Image (cartoon, rainbow, N blue to C red; front, side, top):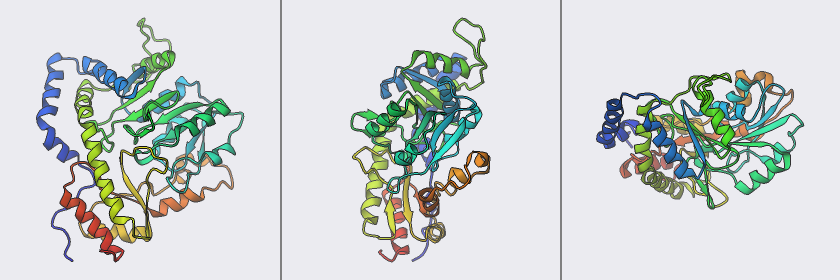
Length: 374
C-alpha cells in the first residue's frame, strides 16, 4: 500500500489558528488597544473564568505550570530536608520544582494498567520527612479521588495536583483542577488549551496560599506595595490570557472531538493483542490530552507510521529516575519495573480535534496493517 500523500500531524496548532483566526486576532487587538500588555484586565478575566470552571476559590495566572508547581511547594512550606512524593513516569517538570525548592523528590513507580502513581508503593516510602505529594493526571485522566484523599489524610500531606494534562477530566462530580489543597494547570502549546507561547495557573481554596503565589509571581510584591518575600517574574502576558479565555469557550467541543477520535481508536485496536490502550479503569472521564497505548515492537511500529506520513511521539522514553538531573535523589538499589517497561512500550498517536475523519481512518489503517489485522 502506498504511503499517504500528506503527513498527518501530531499537533494541530496551525489548524486551530486557521479555524479561529478572526477570534484570536480580535482578542489580541482588544488587549493592545488597552495598552496593558501585562497585569491587564484580560488576566483577571481569565482567572475568574478558571474559578468558574473548576469551582476553586482562587486562580492565579502565571508564566508556566512549572512555575505554578514550584510556587505550590513554596506556599506549602516545602524546603530543604523535606521529601515530596512524585510519580516516576511523567514529564520532567512534575519533579524539577521539588529540586528548586531544596527538597528531595521521592519517585514512585506507577500502576500497570493506567500508569498513574501506585499508592501501594508510595505507602512504603513515606517517612517523617515526607511533606507533600504531587499527584499527576497523566495523559488526560485522573486517579480515584477518594483513594488519594484518604492517603494524604492518613499521612498528613499537602496534596498538589499536577493537572497540566488533565484539565477538564472528571471522576464522578470532581473535576481536574479542583483536587486537593492546590492544583496547577499548563497552557503550553502541547496541552489541551494552548497558549501562544507559555502559560500556567495556580488554583487553591486557601486564601493565604493564593496571596503568597500572587506575590511570588511578581517580584514578591505584597498588596501593600512592599516586597516582603523573595519573588520571581512569572507574569502571564495579557494577550496570552485573552486568547486562552477565547479557547476555553471552545474547549467542550474540542474535548468531545478528542473523545470521539479516541473511541474510534479503541474500537479499532481492541482486538489486536499486541496493543493495550491506556484508558480509565474507574469510570472517570478522560479528556485524551494524549492517546497513549502500550505496543509490542513499539519502535518498529513508530518507524512504520513515520514511513507512512503519520506523526507519533513517545511519552515517555526515559522515566524520571533515569534523568541525570535527579541522579543524587535515587537511592541505591531503587527499582521501578513498571515505569521501565512502560518506557519501552508506550507510543502516542495524533488526537488533536482538528484531525479529519479520513486522517483518523488512515492512522487506524496504518496501525492495523502493521499488526496484520487490516
